[in-house]
Length: 253
Ligand code: PEP
Image 1 (cartoon, rainbow, N blue to C red):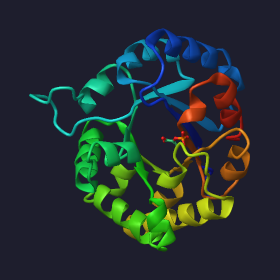
Image 2 (image 1 turned 180 degrees about the vertical axis):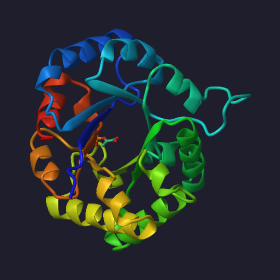
Image 3 (image 1 turned 90 degrees about the horizontal axis):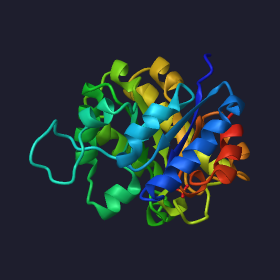
Image 4 (image 1 turned 180 degrees about the horizontal axis):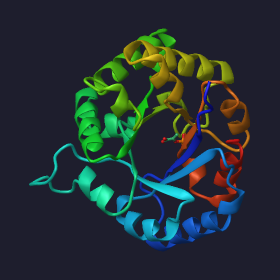
């Protein structure tokens, strides 16, 4: 079976002034030669900064946006399109993050529209899914995630899936300091991979990267990344500083 290239993606959310962001990015690039050969490093800064980051990034770090709209252009005040993201040199876009779902009323249907649109301009998508604590306590987490994926991936072909990375982010672990255990992460990732195999085919399941997200840090990353179905992480808080992010990158061997 082929070895999947791991991904470590930093989701900076709405953090860092422009100059702070440039400084952290420059520090990260100083360590690019240490990045594991089998890891792809992605930074998703505030979209305003993407152009400047793209000019500096070279081949060692890929850039992503944190959201996009599903229309090409028009009267959508405050929104940015997938075309715009692509045109400034970013290659990825996070979609369906739980903060977008809970604070900005993004439904699975909206996520699906965004995803299909992003793929038409060849943006790679990091599609987030994951259950709340309530859903897990009710033992509905597998059905929940399956439903999110069913809708988000509606109508996609196996070829289109090559541009989709899945991030399993249990909502109860995001920014809380709680992390899924190794077993909880592995069983959900294996479940998602089986789902992809049934929905698309074995080859697509074997090649799709499934990232873990939720209070991932230097201490827990080596254990989580050693799960056979965990292909790296989507990192929030710990991606904001080199001292906390670099060890996570180095754990993706
Ligand atoms: C995230 O928001 O995608 C995330 C994983 O955040 P944190 O690492 O801070 O839990």
